[in-house]
Image (cartoon, rainbow, N blue to C red; front, side, top):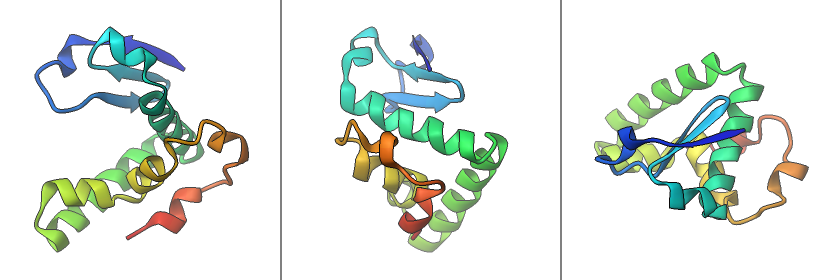
Length: 109
């Protein structure tokens, strides 16, 4: 995993984003945020097990499905199965040691 602080996230609400194999963070200080980094590591694992491209396809399709269903962009984002898993387990630093393959599946909406 490579962590890079990028100014392109400065003017957004995004604190970090995982784009396999890189995690972009909004500021250098966020590199030390263990919970945020663990959240992004979970996304990297999800991306890897879905051969990266299928993760992005699934993510976008699920987002738009939820957006049209919920009529709220933030709720749609929070309801994506990948995000639900990452938010649920971000405080567990050992999660990736015991995580089963395709664990996000049990978090689908």
